[in-house]
Image (tube, rainbow, N blue to C red; front, side, top):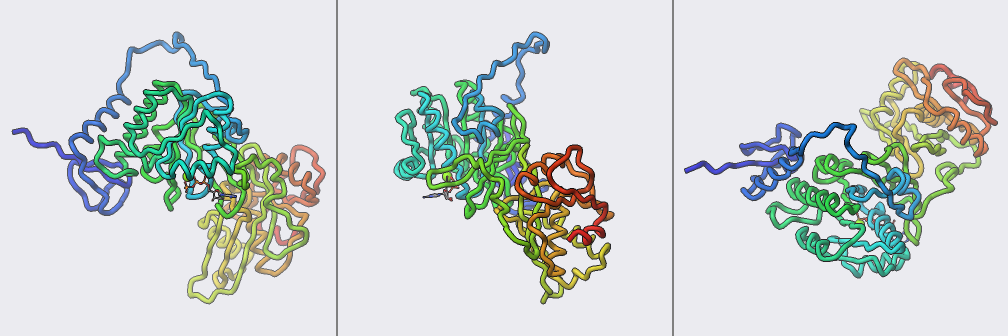
Amino acid sequence: MAKKKTLFECQACGYKSSKWMGKCTNCGAWDSFVELSAKEIEILQKIDKTTLSSTNVIPITEVEQDKIQRIPTGMDELDLVLGGGLVPGSLVLVGGSPGVGKSTLLLKTCANLAKTNKRVLYVSAEESAGQIKMRADRIEANEKNLYLLNELVLESIIAQLEKDHFDLLVIDSIQTIYSQEISSAPGSVSQVKAVTFELMRLAKSKKIPIFIIGHITKEGSIAGPRILEHMVDTVLYFEGDSSQEIRLLRGFKNRFGSISEVGIFEMTKKGLVSAKNIAKRFFNRKNALVGSAATVIMEGSRPIILEVQALVAETGYPSPKRSSTGFDTNRLTMLLALLEKKLELPFNQYDVFVNIAGGIKINETAADLAIIAAILSSFRNRPISEETIFLGEVGLTGEIRDIVMLDNRLKEAASQGFTKAIVPSRPLEKHNIKTYIVESVEKIVDWM
Ligand SMILES: Nc1ncnc2c1ncn2[C@@H]1O[C@H](COP(=O)(O)OP(=O)(O)OP(=O)(O)O)[C@@H](O)[C@H]1O
Ligand SMILES: [Mg+2]
């Protein structure tokens, strides 16, 4: 008799093994292996084969280019991140932490499309139709072409799409939908993989765009697997603190456009609206303050003025605390070590806390100088003028390094009434702001 084939899968990373393992050799997770059933093995093999199978080879010169007709979503910020609108047949993953506004954004997008006579299906496995209706009333999304389906089973959703034609499908959320063909729980690696694969096939065969919503785990990745990011065409992440009104929609991957643009929204009672006038949203201080410095970060092609805050206090612990919100803690530790060495300041006896106002995360190094300025200001108890802006990256040797788009940042700062800028190099253009070049961290003290 032939021996039964066994296969185990890590539920944390999707790694497969013919033997059960207590600890995954790929991702290090403990007790994460479950045995796959024969049916599951068959489905997963089918997925892999379909991805690998190829038809006849064609010379590239003879391939006809796909003519993409993008569909405007009725939300400028979303169109911007999508690369100019929604592409028919594309699978778009929208990830974000709980309560950030994923359902709100997509329900409004559905309503906008329904308004243009497109039939839209919003599948929710998390909320009842009544709950969605309540949201629709609040954000004015009541359109007769917008249909709701309260369903958990993938096969029923597909049957619905076979029965009726829809121009857009939204799945809220991928972790709650399950395929009856797979026995593991919704949200597990094999479920998420199989459901996404079926949705991808559906999007391509019916040439309709599909949005899937994905929850983000505490670690910041889409729960379930990274595999999801590989399978879909576009991955967008919704960022922002649900206690703050500003939300950023960032492209992480896009097969149909650039990922350098960022959509900026504002959460209002009527839902998410484009946050056009954000110039002074993150910095509206009118006097000099201790421990607060201004900088300009670039979000895509848009400059945003930010307030960086720092608190330096004598420590009561054997090893001082370092904590930061919106800024990389490792980088903060590096900057403190540099200040200790170059300026001979005893930071080993002080706790240091850094906060970026407005719930924004800084993903670039151009704010280093502002962080240092805020720390020094708090340490020395000396206020920084509300008219000064700090721009520059700090290197390990203490030198202040050049940053990209210096002129764009200075232009924005000048237009918002800043009069003095501490910069790493001479700008190319002339701006209505006085610039002072600093070459090293030791020199920054002179400008505070
Ligand atoms: N009446 C209201 N006025 C203003 N904002 C509201 C109101 N009701 C809800 N909100 C905002 O909407 C957010 C919830 O939005 P939504 O349900 O779209 O988020 P989500 O990302 O889908 O959450 P989940 O992960 O729970 O599905 C709340 O955190 C709140 O900021
Ligand atoms: Mg939701």
